[in-house]
Amino acid sequence: MAKFDVDVQLSGNDGNAFAIFAAVTRGIRRAGGTSEDKKAYLAEAQSGDYDNVLVTSMKWVNVH
Image: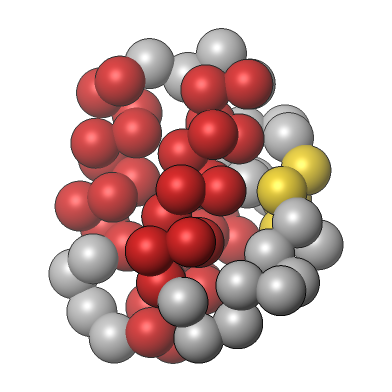
């Protein structure tokens, strides 16, 4: 279960971590998340490789 119940489409952003960061942070904001939530997501997502970006994104929002 994602931390925020919001759907975010990531298809078309394959290989572009920055586009994924932008899509997920927009989703967090749409779901009522705070700027602290967005900062926490980015810190976790940027703490590893590209696979970590995907796994972290799926923990925070519903990815499609």
